[in-house]
Structures are given as structure tokens and as C-alpha cells.
Amino acid sequence: MNFHYVVKELYYQRRRTIISVAGLSIGIALFIILNALSLAYREAARAPLKEIGADITVQRAGNVPEELTGAVFPCSAITISREEVSKIEKIPGITGIGQAVLVWVFDLNRAWIVLGIERDNPIGPAILRNFVTEGRFLENGKQEALVEIGYARQFGIKLGDIVSVAGRLFPIVGLVDASRAPKIAVANLYLPLKDAQAIAVSSKPLQSVSPFAPGDVNLLFIKADQQQIISAAAAMKSILGEKAVIATPESFLKLLGSLFALSDKFTLAASLIAMLIAILIAFKTMAGNVSERAKEIGVMKAVGWTQQNVTMQFLMESVLQCFAAGLLGILIAIIVAFGLSFMTVNIPIPWEMSPTPHFLPGGGVQLYKTLRLPVHIPATLAFFALLLSVFVGGFTGALLGRHISKIKPSEVSRHE
Amino acid sequence: MNNADILMGTNLSKRFDNLEVVKDVSLTVKEGEFVSLVGKSGCGKTTLLSLLSGLEKPTKGKVILNNKDITGASEDELALFRRDHVGFIFQSFNLIPTLSAWENVALPLFPIKMTGEQRSRRAHDLLNQMEMGHRIEHLPGALSGGEKQRVAIARALINNPKIVFADEPTGNLDSVTGEAIMAILNELHKKKGMTMLMVTHAEELAASADRVIRMKDGEVIA
Image (cartoon, rainbow over all chains, first blue to last red; front, side, top):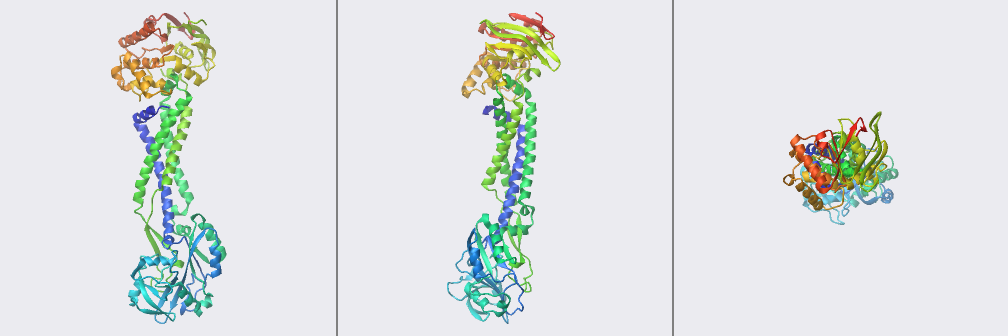
């Protein structure tokens, strides 16, 4: 094998080289882009959960409240007992749990959506501390509340006001901008978890539909090992029963409905087809090259090149072309990915995760999490594509090289 | 085979399907001898040259070249043997179009482990001997027929061969250029003692050889 000869051959046969490199590079670029899009949709599907610091949210559907007075649970989020939470904690792959209590409180002159949160747990709604626009976040051990800024404006609630919720008094210590906050687990009044639990425990209408003991909750936010999310979700279902509503990145992916989101198999099949077409183009160009060069091979063999020498020469030409095609394909993919990253995607939030009663203003509106499609090309994908193109080059080069190396040296005199 | 014989073909036959192109031919070439193989087009002289040089395997018979029986050698063994002991000059030059003149000359050396500089120096020396020093970096497409054949001769000599096989070396050249090429071959034979077996259909060119072998219908007639 002579590298100088390889380079000169590719340089002087520019048209052939360009067709071969361009064909394969388009295939490589398609392969990368399809996989990058699939990854982007997966990452987008993680966003609603990720922004609340969780990988999974858990709630359980139950009966509709018999009457809308006092504190009641939404029918989409009834009691999850302390014992059930303990069992969930022990599921393999679970790395952390955040708990919350969501209650609707229908007082005489006002309806509240109340969310009781764990003040110091980074998993779950305590992430709201980042969205306090006035005042401060909840302090440890104090009976106090945060109110959503839009709700505060609507009802003229100000910092320092004391509001009455289910017969308990809470001073307002901060205003929260929920429009910037996560789309799930939003409310208009945020209390320490134990206060929300106390409201639930003391509510007869709530207890009559869904018995609730001190320490119970009705929303869980779970961090889990990425590889074990699906198995952990299945295990939770077996603990909480068929009515458990378990939101995972997979379930959000299904809501997206995109072909890329729907099926890994689609992505795999489409990218493999793209690669196959590219390989066929490259193979056809190189095969044409081989037949054009039969006499040249005859000369090489006549002057003393062995079959291995000839095979290595073609192998190197092919590998070099395919390596160049791989690099070009990555470059094309980076440019296309940059363009695609300006696309936005709307992720629908399931109604059962929307805390607003459907009969209140805004309650029936479909919520979306809107974000720019996070298309990027991971280094591992780019490296794999490059490796794949070099493998294609090696395979086609070896195949054609072996074939052509069998040309007899006497071919050279047969063409005289 | 005595020491002076460098090439000996014995009872050589070659059949392609039902056509026997070479029929029971025996011939010997001595070291330092210039032999012409003459005959009309299609008489089997190029096929005989291919058999004697190891480019083609005979259907029957035996070839001993430089004291080695090459008849049963594998393709790769023959390739290595040709690389070390044989030079070829073809009618249509057979230069690689993407390689420069000196790279074409160095083509037989590409698979050999040596530095690029060594290859280049040997090729440059030979091209200078062929009065092609001014065309060293040119591609074959930029060379005239005579220049291409000079490059081809230099390529045939790059491995210091024991014998050079020339197949109609002036066949694609005009008469003046052909004479110049024959002058180079004669000089190689006379001054350097190069053994040569040349196939030609031109009697006047064949006459410059030490010995003329005539072929007709696949057989040696004289």
C-alpha cells in the first residue's frame, strides 16, 4: 500500500471521489440527524419532569368529591399512604422522593388550590424558591404561605396579609410567579407540607372520599436511575394499584406523537435505510472505479504487486474516502442540527396533572410545556457514525479489493 | 539447462477454451542475448511472451527463468518473482494516468519497504538516463508517445531485471520515434548486456536482434 498513490488517485479522479464521498456523507448525515432528533424528542419529553427536579411523578385517581365544600382532593390525586411511600422508597433504582399534598379548599368566599410542599427537598415543588418575585420563601417551622402572583393580583392579596384557609390563618410571606414555574404541581397557595396535611386530615368531606392519615400525601416526585425508570414505574403500579397515574419521560414521549417520539424502531429503521442507500451509492461508484481500472491492476500485478498489495491499495482508497465522507457527514449534521434547534415543541400536560378544577376559570384549558427542540449531536453519536463510515469503507474496499486483486496480470497484454 | 541459459520454455502450449493459441513451443534465451519473436498478428507471440515471463500459466509445458521453474508457482510467487527479476515494456505503455513520470517508474517499488527518497532517487536516475529529466513531474497525459515509452522503459529497469520482455515496444509510435526507442533498447543490450525478448511484427525491427524466432499459427517455424 502506498499512501502517496492513494491520495493522488483520489485527487486526480475528483469527480468519482466527490460522488462517492457526497453520497456516503449524506447517508451519514441522515443517520446522525435522525438519531439526534430522536434523542432531542426524548430530552424534550423529560423537560416537564426535569424542571421540577424529578424523573417520575406519581398520583392516584379516585372518586369525585361528593360535595365541593371545605377541603377536598381532586379526583385525580387521592391518598398515598405513608406505608405505600415506604414501599416505593425501597424499589430498586429509586434515588430520592419528594412529597406533596394538593387540596382544593372551597371556603365561603373563595376557592383555593393549595399545595403543601417540603421546604428543603430539592426534588419536587420546593423548586419554587427560584420563582419568588416578592417577599421570601417559606421558613422552617413557621405556619405561613406563598401566594401565586396572578391570583394575588386578582384578589388583592398583598405581602403581610393574613389569609384564612379551611379555618386556619396564614400570613403571606412571598409572591410566586407561576407563569415561569414548572407547569405541573402548580397552585395558587403554597403551604408547608405539614400544614396542608393537617388541613386534609381535619376535612370530613375529604376523609369520606379518601381516608387520609397524618403523614400521608397525594403527590410524589421521584428521582430514579435513568436505566431503571420503566421497571420502577411498573413496580409502583403494582404497589398503588391500577388507578395509579405514573408520569415518566416515556409517557410524555407518547403524548408528543411524533414519529421520532413514537418509536426507537422507526429511527433505527430509517437511519439504517439512509445508511444502506449511501453504502450502495458508494459501493456502485467504487465498483465502477474498479472495472475502469482493470488494466491498471494488470500493470500493477505485472510489475510485481501481490494480491495483498492490490487489496490493501483499494482498501486504503476506500477507507480514506469513507473517512472523509464521515467527517463531511458530521459537519452537515451539525449544520442541520443547528437549524433544527430553532424548532419549538409543545408538550401537552395531561389533565390529571393539572391542579386547577375543570369547572373553575382556566381549568379546562389544555396546558402545554413549550420549549425549543434540544437538538444536539452527542460526541458518542458522531464518533460512532465516523466509525461506521470507516467500517463501510473497510468492508467495501476489502470486498472490491479482493475481487479486483484476482485480475490476471496478463489482462495488461490482452488490452493491447 | 546450462549456465548461459537464462530462459527456457519446454513444450509450451496454451489453450483458451477450444482454441489452442500456442502449440508445443520450446525455446531458449541465453544470458545477454537479444531475441526477437516475429509473426503476424494473432499468431500467438504475445501469448508465448506471457507464458515465458510468468504473466500467464501454460496449459502444458514448463518454464525455467533465471534457474527457477516458475510453472507451478502461485500468482503471488510469480508476482514477487517478476518484481525481482523481470522487466516489461508494453506496446501501449501502460502507465498509470494519475501518477507522474517518476512515480510510474517507481511503481514496482511501491510495495517494497524503502524510503520515498530512495525510490525517488532511483526513478530520477533512470529518467535522466532516458533523457526525460525535464518531464519527471509530468503526468502521462502530458507526455508524447515516445516520452511515455521512455518512462515505460525506465520502469522496466527500476528493479535491475535479469531479462526484459518487450511486447511490440514501437507498435504505437511513428517510425522516427520507434527508431529512437529501438536505439535505446539496442544500447541497453549492447552497452549493459541486458537480456531481451522482444515481440514484434516488423521484420526490420526484428533484424536488429541477435536472433530471430518466427511464429505462425501458434508454432515456432524458424
